[in-house]
Length: 75
Image 1: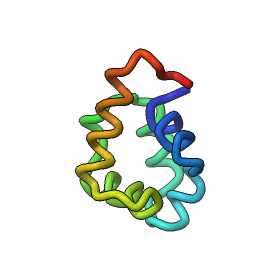
Image 2: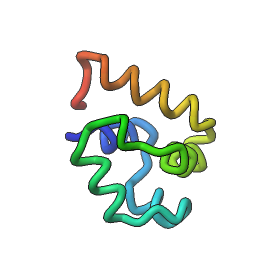
Image 3: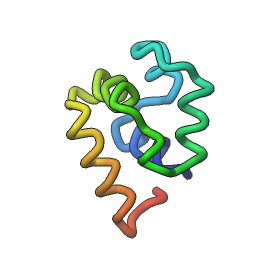
Image 4: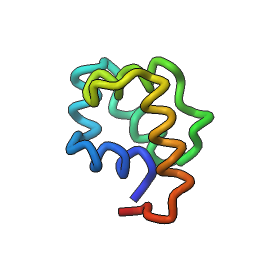
């Protein structure tokens, strides 16, 4: 499983729901998910995800960095 999907799964959120709430297109979310490169995530992407997790963009980024560095992913 890709990084974005792993993160969203840990919060019981789908990419579809992120797209609906944040306005980020499903195609963009798919590309982010496939790239597994945090450098591809913009602040807008992080804010959009944060809308659903109740976190700031900084907190989302920190969580994604920790998940990327952990040996526990993919779930």
